[in-house]
Image (cartoon, rainbow, N blue to C red; front, side, top):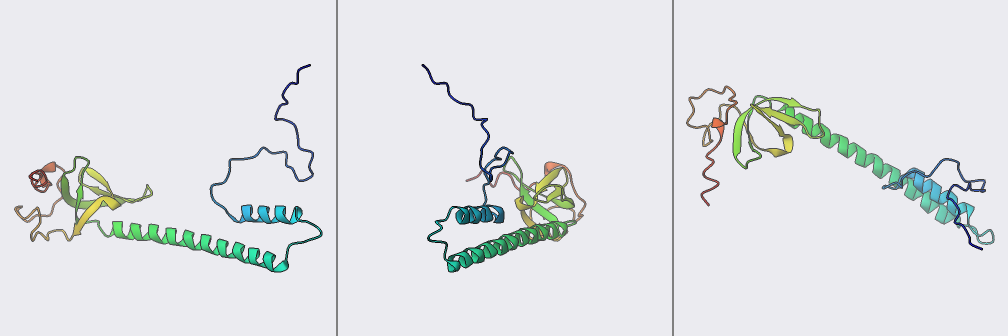
Length: 173
């Protein structure tokens, strides 16, 4: 006589089981998980040796601390995003330099900023540059010692690659 394996569709008979299937495991511990663990601990504790009230208070305090740290993290993340937006908006009309995909330093006037992505994107001539790729910002027209010192002094934005700094300087090494 052979024994056939059973299917995993057998319903649990526990009063605490849910009819909904289990979802993917959470990657972060939040207050829901903490409370579920606390309830499971209380439900399964030995009746002859119940949990000490000081332990329960300590766990409740840990939960409150965790919630406050989570709120602080969220606030810090929002503050950083706002600082990036302010910094990017302040670049409009300024001369910026960045290294393009070919490894060549490009310089131009920041024309606009897009906040459509997680990191603000600065429009410089024909390029759209992430804020964290901008290497230099200076007032437009401030050409002392800069790559555009040989220009006629106008600050109109240029869209061709002639605004690059000396590309051969990086290859001379």
